[in-house]
Image 1: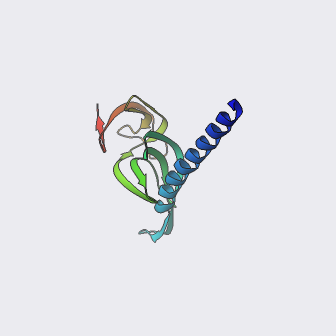
Image 2: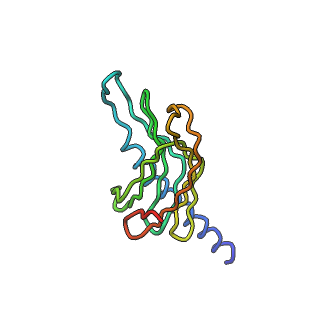
Image 3: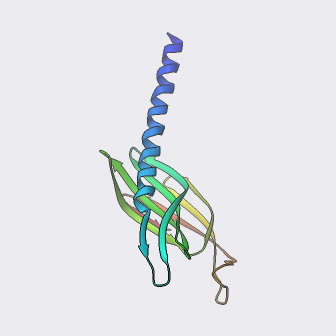
Length: 141
């Protein structure tokens, strides 16, 4: 009987992980588009960096937006339910994100940003921002 409990727990965790991965991957897939910019044909793609489950069907997704000649770290608050993904809030980070952490409704973002004369290739100013997740919003602390 004891083993049956562990098997059921393992199956439940696997189903949850599949659902979480599907919600996050569906969101990233929805961001992949084709289009044209001023200078080149461009395919926009997303690369998942990190995701956090806040509560049932509510997630923070940190992903890298990439085009032919442009990139940007983006962090979204999304809700996934009934096969649909809804964007609730978003942050566009101007720089190179080194890490994010989420704990107790606080999202910590550490990144390198740009000084006044720094080229796009080489952000060098360290910044740390904290955002409180309240309701459907990121609030800067």
